[in-house]
Image (cartoon, rainbow, N blue to C red; front, side, top):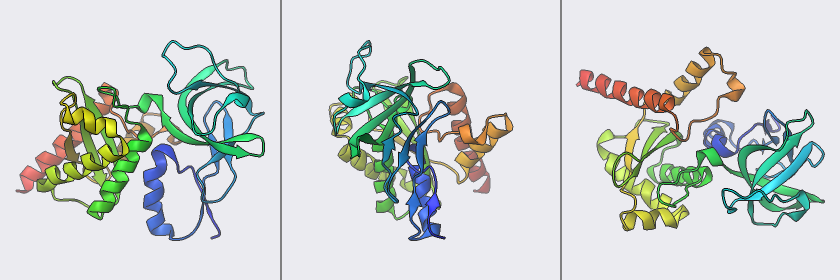
Length: 272
């Protein structure tokens, strides 16, 4: 096997790490960056999760990531600045006009005259209880560091931003590759919050000033997220359209994952 071709960035990064435990040093080609609406960029170098925009695949417009919510003044492809993040807006070849796909990318440089980008996060997956703005990439990095410190690969995770309680707080549901000791959840949480504060100092500041309460951490049963994918496919969703659940942003998602936690607790109580 000379290389592995896969979609392995963004929400799939955790699966890429898990796959490497089986694939060893076989290099990865991250292939393409695209969506149902358009093929937007292609990977140019093996083992590098960066992509050159396909400038003739659709018409691109961009909004600076820090632009006000009501901003309508977009930038063209020749106005991008290296090191900055932008939300992508596309008009595709089928006439889908000025569609906000809610992806935010970061400009890394240029491949010839084409901007070279990497995926940063989806706006719909942004966590923000008190101006902390935790992106998916920040959360993924904190989870990776936590797993490294615990000596276990955390295969999957999801987060519930609890705004019902005061002060509000996050509830992390993590699925480790091998079961961890449930009695040590407070210790695992301290490690996770430490690393989250490192990748996002604003989060640490919000916790230190009591704008956000300390988080809660739950251990999920293994294969919980695989079961979610199976359920979605059985209900008619194409497997290619089932994305990792990183934020519990709908009642259906919240009910499913918390119900799975409750079933795991009941099974544990029955065994004891």
